[in-house]
Length: 243
Length: 293
Image (cartoon, rainbow over all chains, first blue to last red; front, side):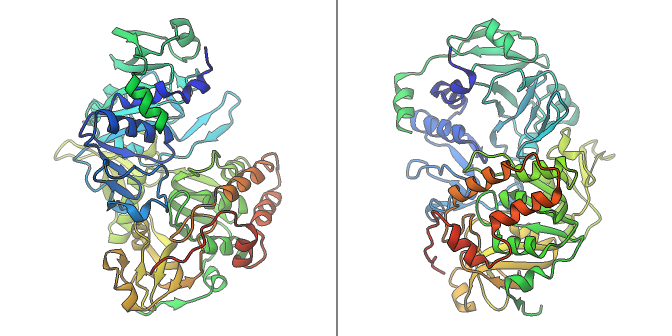
């Protein structure tokens, strides 16, 4: 079996992300998310031609006539932007929730994500890039996802060291927020919340329960409809090979 | 409103006083007023509190340089090189700085409260997360509606440094396009210092009305291609330079002497020395073309 890191780069992981994007979604593309850029392209070209895309610096009004930039504030792409996105007013409209895919250094069993900092067993604190705008972006969102590019017991933990994204259903309900976490997606599996605990909904081909248990820092449970992650279709393979 | 002062980099950097809270504009790999940042590192004010929305490796350099006692930022890092933030990490481990990681929405709210001169403002984004665990935020319950909210205290900035493509002698700024959140920072600041690629006439600025930020600088310092090594109107971010910076600083991960860490930053930034000489000697793939005003 390929290593988790190798699989992180795999097209199937990108497709697993893309398959959660539906036509007409208003997607917020964050910084440092090259796999998500590809997933958005895949979805747009195959089944979601009317995506609304907000990327730092620009809104993509008509994805069919321009490619979303692959770099935040890409100076080369900026002159061709279709609409300017100003960072200072980007959170003025939280009524229309954006679909958000939050990359995380850690995700815990109750569905909380962490991109701020991780404490190692030795006590050393490793800083991540920060909260960015994820806490605000996901507060009122009815559809968000957590992405973990390295499926390991260091990343999928019983309890995160810091909470950047509140996924916990019970806590969200207490605060009056919609139940927004749809999936936690890793190269090996996809999880969803059942009774406030992550359950495996999908496993990559070639991944078995023992492998998942070994690489996950909380007990593995399965949804009643858990299945193997569908392999790449020929259309998906064709598009991804061109990206 | 008085006309802004037009100063050199060195003159502008000397306006920053020890202990000030200073915002630094731009976002990730683009739009940082880096010539000014480099000059301030060289001038060596102490105990600054640095505020950034989406900070780049410029914030990492400040952290390692010993100028700052604290950093407040929603994000610090680079998108074009696979690096963490070696300067911040080491400065933290040596106890040189505190870092308040903050949600971007909360940061904008705190700066808005400063700009509007209110004792606090309210926000709901980030409730229930660790992003509210800082001196600016208190989670509260509205007795009338039963709605949970965050009480956000103002974040006052003594000064902010931003980059714009051009300015005129009235302090009107011509933005490159997207604003990086810099207008929120400018509005929250007492002293607004703009580094611009060039100074042009008001008539020329007015040819681009949708990119003009009127009367937004108290000090203007013209520096051609001054965002280098970060991207700007006429520059791509210099990935190779930024990669070399990160590799250089990683060599200093074991140091325990703050002066050694500062020396590492000075060495890579060629301090002391003029900015244009530093740029010419180290640039690798800057486009270096003039942008249209």
